[in-house]
Length: 232
Image 1 (tube, helix red, strand yellow):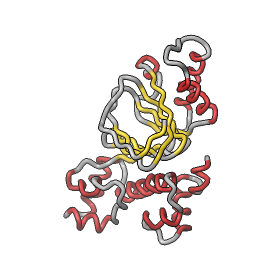
Image 2 (cartoon, one colour):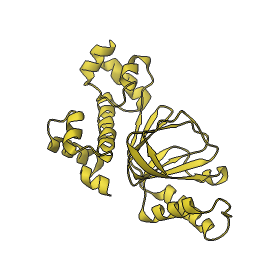
Image 3 (cartoon, one colour):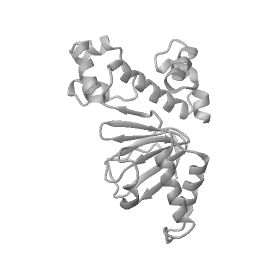
Image 4 (spheres, helix red, strand yellow):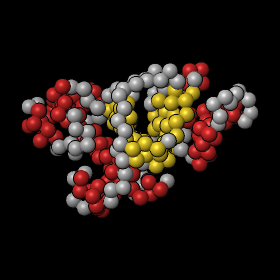
């Protein structure tokens, strides 16, 4: 399914949803959680969880829905994961199957069993960011594309001390503000690169003094360079 510049309202499905991104980058907002789906990765969303999608630019995605009985065998929380070539082929076969297909008959029963195993066992990706709910931080969360300021600047802007802000973030996100800001930079960096921005543009937008500083940061946070990540 090809999607361009799409922004849905919050909605939910009675079935569990697995979404695989072939190209482009898609955001899922699930409650107070910002979830990024980069190319060649997948996201699992359990049944009956309100979420909305945001696509900037173009994305090519595949959607597979699992009924409640099958979904009960899968994680009960949202997760982003690697998608192996095997899982990609399984998803393609499931998507292309005729609607009247009997899913309990071969080979589709085997494909479903294989997809369950892949979703359960695939390595997870750190592509999620919890958003604070405190009303004092509304100006920060209202502009998710804008680089969050340094702590001192944020404290001055919202009229709270750095210690107070730190306690809010620890309580509501499980991270210090600095950790949260660094994770934001990771997700935004992946999103910019996946939608065609060059490294130089991405580094500047994320507040790095040079391309090499950004690449070093990315490698420290993710374990590989931006180019290697997008090719994997």
